[in-house]
Amino acid sequence: MDISYILNILGEERGNYFNAVAPPIIQTSNFAFNTVAEFRDATKDELHAHLYTRGNNPTTEIVRKKIAALEGTDDCLIFSSGAAAIAAAILHSVKSGDHVICVESPYSWTYYMLTQVFPLYGVTTTFVDGKSVENFENAIQPNTKLIFLESPNTFWLDLQDLAAICNMAKTKNIITAIDNSYCTPLYQQAHQLGVDLVIHTATKYLAGHSDVVSGVICANQEHINSIFKTEFMAFGAIPSPNDTWLLLRGMRTLPMRLEKSAGNAEKLINWLEQHPKVEKIIYPFHHSHPQFELAKKQMQRGSGLFAVLLKTQDKNKIEAFCNKLQRFLLAVSWGGYESLVFPACIKEGSDYPVNFVRFYAGLEEADVLIEDINQALSEI
Ligand SMILES: *Cc1c(COP(=O)(O)O)cnc(C)c1O
Image 1 (spheres, protein in one colour):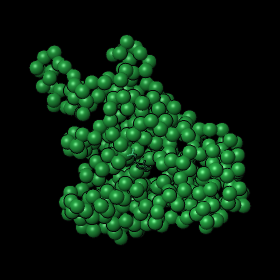
Image 2 (tube, rainbow, N blue to C red; image 1 turned 120 degrees about the vertical axis):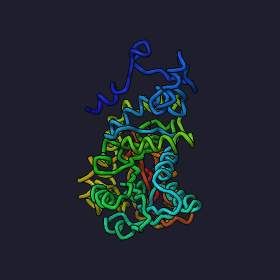
Image 3 (tube, rainbow, N blue to C red; image 1 turned 90 degrees about the vertical axis):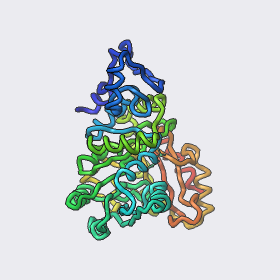
Image 4 (cartoon, rainbow, N blue to C red; image 1 turned 180 degrees about the vertical axis):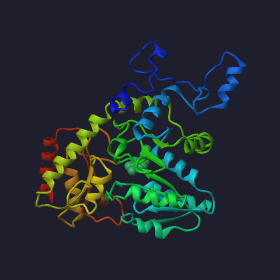
């Protein structure tokens, strides 16, 4: 299936809604039946029937089909946030007494869940340097049930060798999960590399307009059926049909947005790497990245998120630089249309170097962004 078929045609049933090109927002909580027999049938398969919107909603269902097809999995579930999807994936994989191996420096709330929340329920986690498969293998305990990956992660842009780790995990019957948000399904097909549960925060590139919070898990039908019955239906962290409609609308232009954002990042990096006030570029597709070869092996391209170390240890200068930027908004998140800057010195007492600054390249003209950084670098 080609990408434009998935984004424009797959899952759309225009004959059911007046041949409208854009599908309606089916803003309803429940669905009515003509007969008791039809009603009864629907209760038998809530994942596919239209019975109650906590289980399945026609607007949301279109997006489920498209994201599953992009990831190459049987099915996909959409949650009310990326964090809800991550929580559901972990809950699905472990029970009290089990052990998780997680790559070090995952998304901050993944780290919080695994260090502060899951231990309350008897689930322990070992964090490992993800650069070698042996580190995962050496951390395995008899009760290890899940290996949680994030490649690349979104600050240090560190990678893990997905195929090698998944091959190893399969021989030991350990479930693998990845937060694949940085790449989107267009730049890294994690399921094809062997990962069981592929998670995205749809808040970032998939929705892409900084107006929706949601998340997804893509997996084979067996995993999805189990997650649906337990974590999805029982906890009920579902998005509204209005939000999944916005997600669908955002996804129509995913390939062009991603290309523009990634292209802008490349142009910014090409300019920044020459600059005397820049000490280091941190980007998976930069020749200086220690895992550049692995990046080329398992990713199609880097996306719009990268970091730099500036040539100063003066926090005030870093702050003045960020304050002087006009076209990069000072904000969390990424993956939208607007360029962003996130200096690590925001995090009090963090172990990031003070001169670490993360950029997200949005959809503006590259020369405008370069000019903006150029004028702000006068503060360094
Ligand atoms: C933002 C983010 C999340 C969390 O997503 P929400 O939709 O905000 O819950 C998870 N993983 C990564 C890598 C993120 O950047």
